[in-house]
Amino acid sequence: MKDSTSFKKGKNILSLIAVNLAIAFICLEALSLAFYFINQKQFFYTRTKGKEKVVEDIERLGIRLDESIVERLHPFFGYVLKQGAFTNERLKLKVNKQGFFSLYEYPFVKTNKNQFIIGIFGGSVANNFAVDEYVTQRLSKKLNSYPEFANKEIVVLNFGNGGYKQPQQLLILNYFLALGQELDLVINIDGFNEVALSNLNNKARLELGMPSVQHIQPLTGLANNNLSPEAMSSIVQISETKKELKTGIDKLQTCQLALCHAVTSLRVKQLVNNYQQAVVKYDAQVKQSNPDTANSGIVYLPKADSVFSDAAAFDKMASMWYESSIGMNQILSSRKIEYFHFIQPNQYYQTTRTFTAEEKEIAIDKNSPYIEGVKKGYPVLLSKVDDLQKAGVNVFNAVNILDNTKETVYKDACCHYNSVGDELLANYVSSSIIKVVRKPK
Image (cartoon, rainbow, N blue to C red; front, side, top):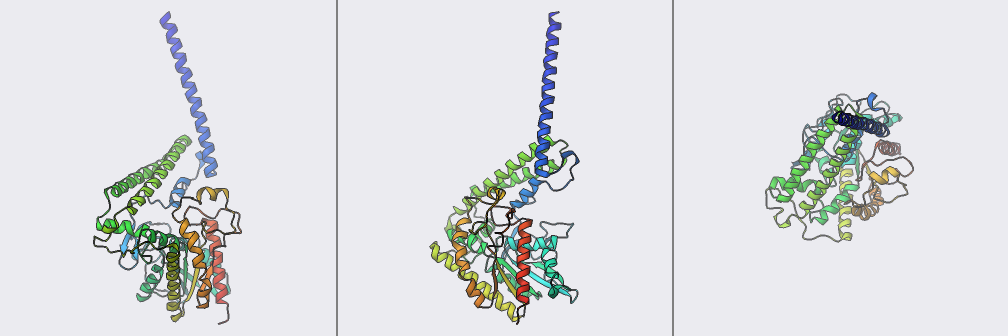
């Protein structure tokens, strides 16, 4: 009898535990459903299988899950992207044979006289501008709305890549013109890399005119086999974290329960934080590498004798930027090709813009390595705008074009814009072009 009572008590306890667990599961599932709805604006069980928000966040941060190093050393440009990387079969977008993300191979040859070729030059903002054009045709539609371009088939060629800074744009322009690339109009979007990344070059004692130390030094370090064991260990950690990230993202696509999705999303976000910390650690280890052994291998990067003072460094950066733009304009003018130079907005250069709550969270990093270069360098660049205009360059100061919108326009803590920002930039570029085209010659 006692055993029977004990058995019943045990059974009741197990039933109670089971009921509590079921209630807890239902509550957690309900919370997960609410969490998903808030973030994705749709019900989990009837969701459309689109791109996950956490995946968009990863792409926004520039984390590449397919392979660790997609840049390749280039004998003229410093570096380009690996051919075939980032393929988008639906849009037929991929990195072409020349190392640029584009719909076309270069040199592109016109297939009819009505085509109007626009070359886009600059860093990642210019690259994003061109890629956005491939997806949305913002610039083409805006230009086609003007009588001067109404009957033109606009073809955009992307010559921008992440981290490019003058004189890379000048060198790339010369190279493709030498190959016979026809251009009807050139847009150069720059400014940020010229000061933010060149400032890092200065701190690393790499010649200011050399490609970005953030991009070129890891590549040459691998090529020269002179990375420290600590840096190599960090590369392994970064690679392993990417594998875990890819596994987590794949799991997100197969989750049948909102709770599974919520837990996996949190895990992926933690892995993203781990990745960013590993990258910061790796960058620090690369910077600490012995400068005396930096050129002991087969790849040569000219080093400065010492770190320039801020005044001297930014004056030299601005002078190089100025001369490069003058050079592009002279070369293109001699061929009767219109050149348009736009100085990009950046969140670290103070304007009248009031940042949204979202931007304060995702777009402002008080520890950003770019802040010093932007705050000290932009005023020096902007001081040369009048001289560029007097020299006949169609240069436009675009740093204030995002100030009048109350919507979020920045999508990361570097320099990049979301769809709203892309739209505003495309509006400004197209309206600036038409003003020049309509000027009496």
